[in-house]
Length: 537
Ligand code: FAD
Image (cartoon, rainbow, N blue to C red; front, top):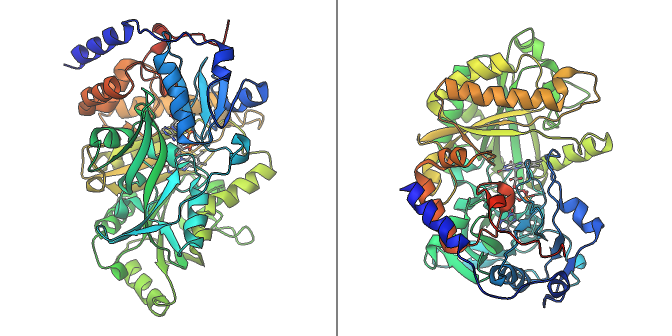
């Protein structure tokens, strides 16, 4: 079936279309309010990403002033007899060139509006009586940090579901899923969006939601930029808490650690006082990493020694991380509520670390670490990151084979591990997760330092580790799914999507029949297809 759909699809793609033949000068005359640029100073940043290991040079960059500009550009490609690739780029925080458009046009969705030469007005939050909930409409390229600042300043509101880092774009995370320690409770960010404006691969600007144009709505969420460019998203809000009690506890026993994590996320529907608001965790395989860049939590003047808790010398520790939100009305019970929750857990006695901070500071915690790393020149280095969704039934195998196996006692970066509830994900979206009710994110967030004089920190070494981890999972029969996926072949993509592959192809044929969008993901081998070199004449 999948092959038949794909064959029909490719045949349709190869049918010559009639229309305008676009020349560079004509493209520059496109009626856009923003700016279409060919300068090397625009091309260079649009050719790379946070991963720092790939390069795809577009021939032009659009700084759009509006959704209309995005539609004008995509329509120009769609109507051209030789359509050219177009990718939306959020903040360029992909790892493997996913937002690139080799020989095409990159749309810089998140860049300062000043670049586009316009003043894009923001909408204020509104209340929906049918949902009994606040929401806000935001530009698809808006960074989450700006959404937070805006909604706090306009009614003390905040989105419900987050990523750990807020300098990511709304369209970029919604094209993947957008996950963090709140996902067990609220679901990923794609479960907290009610309506989208999308420019499809035909250059049509379409409003879609649960009720209207549902196929496009669900397709775009987790859709890796394949079906349309998100220009507006309606995000669910809640009254923002004022403060956060942030707690970390340590385990040397992996079974106890995951049992407690899974117990905490099973409390998602318990009364608010009887559950945490955020549950994550990380693996500590070497002494240095208890104070890794993501762990600003532990004070540098009072570093926590892993050996004092039975780690190091081959030992691995696991850190469970939780938060409880509160404000003036609940401050009186926060100590009591946290204590009651901690009593249920089986961590190493005396390994409880607590801090208390404003909600915004907690949400923006990774940015603080970013600033420190930037100051040391350690942010703009290659990041061969690997993110896996792992079924709960196999997580102990990963501990044995990877945390206490392949990684040795050096990791070069944080390794996050936390479970999520599958029922909080909408199966109609394009996002792919394991089939079990509970699955884990395991994120190997490592930085390569080829100049450090340590072979275990080189890009080559870390990339080889990643391949070994994937091979171990294949051989152990662990049904992982990559999050922020990267696959080299069409058959690997087909395996990645599993039962969702046929639907993915049908959606591609319907919304981007000329394979214009999201070519940087490498899902369709478009180099074999007749792309134009519109700018090269
Ligand atoms: P880009 O990398 O620019 O784009 C990503 C993909 O989305 C591309 O295919 C692009 O074409 C497409 N795209 C971008 N904008 C649009 C749009 N408007 N419409 C349609 N398609 C679009 N992820 C999490 O889920 N949780 C985390 O906690 C988390 N933490 C991170 C921390 C750091 C330091 C970094 C670097 C990344 C983190 N990520 C996390 C990953 C992040 O979600 C992805 O990088 C994601 O792609 C968002 O980045 P971006 O906005 O820069 O998008």
